[in-house]
Length: 152
Length: 395
Image 1: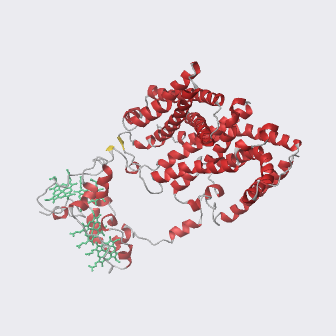
Image 2 (image 1 turned 120 degrees about the vertical axis):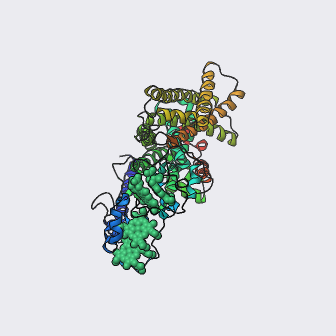
Image 3 (image 1 turned 30 degrees about the horizontal axis):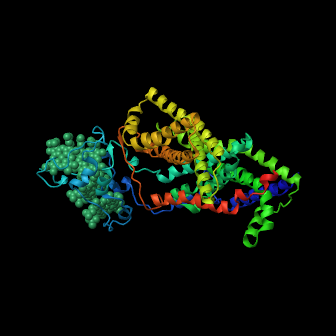
């Protein structure tokens, strides 16, 4: 065997072995248990604080609004899409500072203002500046929970 | 909401929200550019060695060391693009074998460790031994370490250096093709993007890599000769020019074929690509890449095949041609990387690219990565000067 290889082969072998050792220590414990990721990350993510309570929880206490909502075009919406994430309020109803209760033109416009990227068949849109400008806010006419229950 | 109105000024037509901002910026242009320079320079060196083209001898070592200097930097734009340098080793420890991108670490290491370093080592071993005896102080120590303790310089050992170096070169050519074909594959395999998704992409990348690598060696050979105040070997320069010409023809043909094919097929994406090419990419594609980077060098080098002007005139022209080619290939990468992200996958609109100056993704960062290989090369040339090699006469 040539002298060069007598040095190079062991040298490369050492590199590879060092790499394998380093790899052994660098790979996180639970890696690959379920797939190409760290299995522990599931628990870590599950342990993060919850922000949304979910519609079912809100309905427990607010049956009036829930019934109203279910009766009209907004039936498909979740409460927290308008009122904001409120797991804290659901745990303790005294906590109300995170509740959003807006019925302004900008607020409803988040979903209903004209936008070419939205299909009109999927969601009805209006020009929020031109649409019935005689009253200031949308909820001055539309009931946010039962939208076709118009106030005069 | 206001920040959206600001962004929307850069958008024409209809575009999905996640397409407004380009995720792959200038650093992703540099990555294929620099890897291409490596592969090209190496292939030029191999020509000399494997096909025994003796006139190229003066650039052989320069080409190898250039390949090394650029390869060291090749992966770094990616690291700064991804922004998590301390996690970068994970691509080696836990690669997702089903992903082409995850394989880069191994392709890179193979090329660096098995091909380039070994070839250079075999080539310089004799000199390292001699230099370690001749020089003093820290340099002596460095040379000693670089010999890896193999100080046998009997004719038998030297013959092995030559033989093993040759084997490495032979392995190296397909490896260089692999390295850069791989980079093209990364783009060519993105099926959702009609500007990228073509089987020709790896081949085109490879050929443009060779073009740019050859041009780089030509450029460096002239610059290094000027700095060292030695005469430029015109026969060698002409030969490089010849190769540059040949590869440039191939590259040009294939890239045109790709476009002709695209135009003839005229798939549903054609309209938007047509608008892209005649709109946002006009300058970078037709003027920079096409005219300056390809047509002018092609005509000049082609003319040189028929009539060789005087040395005095030829030298600056070669210099200019190499600069133009380097410039053109950079914009070829630009057109691929940026072009592919400018149009919406709805085929109904465009966004625009604005190159930021500062930041990890900005112009200054890119400039650092572009200057770095030249600094490394200067260092390597100082440490392992090809013109001071002893083995030239003996081998």
